[in-house]
Length: 230
Image (tube, rainbow, N blue to C red; front, side, top):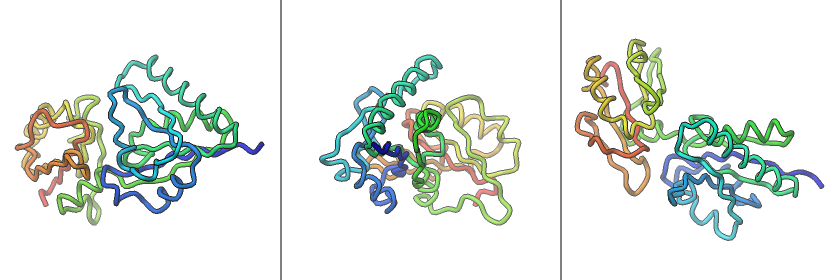
């Protein structure tokens, strides 16, 4: 029996209308849709694709919100084994992931494992959250010779990045909102920053002035910093 193919499908930041035509086709043709499961009951990527998942078998894949390497390794290994079993049956699996699968996506860890096991796995790009956030804010991210730096604000202090002459995207700002605000103020960049929370979702909130964003903003908060302020 010919083995199936695994597709890592980027479904965009939240607005179903930002789902690409290719992503829609892959989801319609897939035998099984793999859904990242954080264990909290909320499956944002599944909500985005909506009717495209109707009538499809769903495979829940663990995506624990932890930095424990052993726990993460176990989850990714289990995901890869489950998916490989379906591929052995000749089934096509579409693993949905927020934004683009190549940008801070937990799917990539499963993708690499499935490839290493000898299966065919492919990436289907999606609209990144920071591009959608820039559109909502009505601003560009870089012009001319501008450089753009993308930083995961949730992982560690970002002060070392701010020494670089660039515009900045701070992703996963959530719990680090207060510290990020203080750091930007220290470097004279707070007035150049804006934020979008839950971009494209029903709970979207826009803060043209990052200084006004509440400290309890959610995990899906993207902060855009333009060094020249424009």
